[in-house]
Length: 66
Image (tube, rainbow, N blue to C red):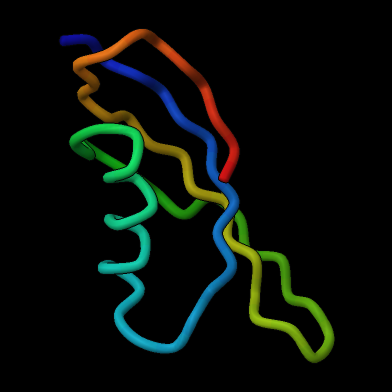
């Protein structure tokens, strides 16, 4: 097990924001902490969120953008 820092971009969808973020992070490991560090508003498109997080991963270290 190891701590893995992540920087993700997530397009905001209708519904629970917390569930969307946790699902995106869950693909990389068990989320320990996360924060929305930027929001990019786009014309006629959902906002783009930048998520900085730390997850607990059982595999090899990877830093990924989603």
